[in-house]
Image (tube, rainbow, N blue to C red; front, side, top):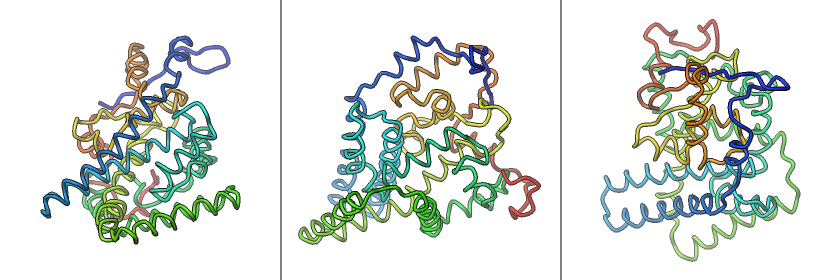
Length: 327
């Protein structure tokens, strides 16, 4: 299914696809749902560690690594919610809480992500979009690809090479627009120093390496990459807002890893970024009642089925510099 969407034009040129009253209802924050999601993610990480340590089995450990990486990705999705102020109503408290519980543990900051992400929303898939300009022409974001090159790219994440590459690239990008105060920087460094002190006192550096560093540098970065591709790359039509972002219908098991917290409804999020994650399925259902929207919306079935079909081609050039177009 590779559909796309356009509705009737409302006053001011913006497509009117949903009743304003419905949109207002869907945009109301329910902090309990967001906080419960964060608590669930950390509880699942804790449970995976506990079960793996109890079992002492390599296979159980590998399963734990993948599950923990999936919940790291879920924490990243909640950073995305925080960037849009969709966690709690108190924005200052939301930023501090989200840094402590979500962003700092995965070496990010809410405000740093917000600056980049809101610019992406404002100028999506144009030369003024920092995400677009940063990824345009990169081999990993050049499509279609040969399957062999795609598999090699994914393997690069599992051995941490591509993960480190992406982290360095992101650090350079974020560093250019860093507007954090000296006090904030000191507090953030203090967070990591305190964490290191606690790990040392408890003698758990081995566990930190096994259950945080390894998942972070392998499957977490892999899941981020696959989602990043799914959102705006591979067989996309950038001439229309309804065909330049992709919504994915994930298979049930994929939700754990590639699509936590309804992050798969990316087209709907771009159209209505004020709607919190827990209302995105309902928003999608309402929009799909519009026949024109349903016929045009770019919807792909499965991160491991439909997405590869749109990204890989047997006759694709082996090297990205052989592409007539770099996306």
